[in-house]
Length: 613
Image 1 (cartoon, rainbow, N blue to C red):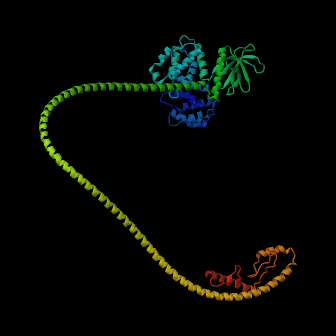
Image 2: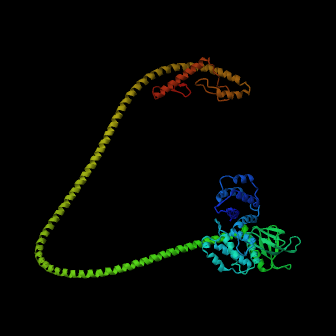
Image 3: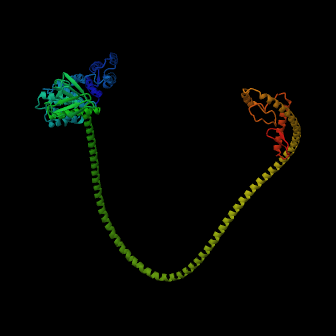
């Protein structure tokens, strides 16, 4: 149960206390005062604007609990911070409002107001998480056992069972006012002093509501002066606080408990007995109990507090309450399972009884059927005797008829022998006919296969004839085209021959020009030998850009000078003649290649010169 649920339970009692007419609604002015008081006790900053805006006077009338819940959640419960307020103050506020209306003890009251308030807080802690709040009998019994253990008396189970056996309690559970009325009646605490009851209620209240695991006096050894001092210790799930005395007004120290803490038993020394120590990360506290039992209880309680901190639980009794609820749910499930099993058993028992009744009816029907069967058997026996007599008479008549039939059978046997012989002959003839028929069928199948093969061959021959005719037509066209091309080639060869003769004449002129050019090149070489070595670099670059002067010339092997090249001029007639000769030589070469090289023994070289063998 979280803090919000605990606060909602208290506020629910305050809200219902303000509902004077029991209509489920409260006036806005009262809710305004309640909200203002809740702001105060919960330590929440006041929001007057929201308070006035939400609870302004209008014609809407009173507000129900469902209408108050949005404001309560948004402006109050959502702003609550645990540790910034005292939970007991909130409980006292809500108790004051609800007790004024609902708590009216009759006659001589056993419980003073403070004890009634603590029992009310215990009731809220142990009640179920449903509204209206009730406490089931198991939790009431648990609380009464805790009170009796605190008073060191035995619980009066008879009176408690009388209260629990009431119909209203069995159906709905204990309300807080019924529980306080039971405690005020004094039947459960008969013979016990009021002071003892008050002390027990306070102890149980501090243990369950205040999360106090254990309280009591222990001797503590000082950290500086190392002397022993008696202190009042209060153990909660996360802290161990010690005071000067049990009135808890002067707090002397606070020991924080976490997963790094441990408790160990120490041997007796320094005149102290029943010693143990509590170790934390920073300090070690030496403590001494009054006896061995107290030491065992303190060490167990401290270990429980450390375990709760490690498991992330803030309250031992909240955890125990959840476990008891789970055990009740498991018991309820087991009880429901047993009831279901019992119902199945009863259903099986009823089914068994029904089947036994059906079996008795079947046995009775079987006996009646047996009687009818015996009667039918006697009737059939009489009929059988009558039938046997009639059959004997018929048998005699049949013997006489058989004698006459035997004679006829002899004749029929001879006739049958002749018929069998005839049948055998017919069967042999049929077999021969079937063999002949099979041979004829096979011959027809072979004939069909031959016809199919012949048709396929004829089709293939026809296709081949068509292909042959098309090839013949193509051959004739090709022959005619070849004759035309031959005539054209003959004419072209004649023209090429004439052009070749002209080219040869021009070639002679080119050779004469080339001879003159060679003489010029020799003169240029003599001049170039005298050039500076720095010109060689430019010669290499110019060599890449130069073209040969004319066909038939050979380069000098130097490769790095102008000895075998010259820059021709566009006005040089020998160059123009050489270019024309090259074009004619290329044209002659193409003609010679197209004619297959058989028209002349002359051939064109790759550099454009005409070579004559």
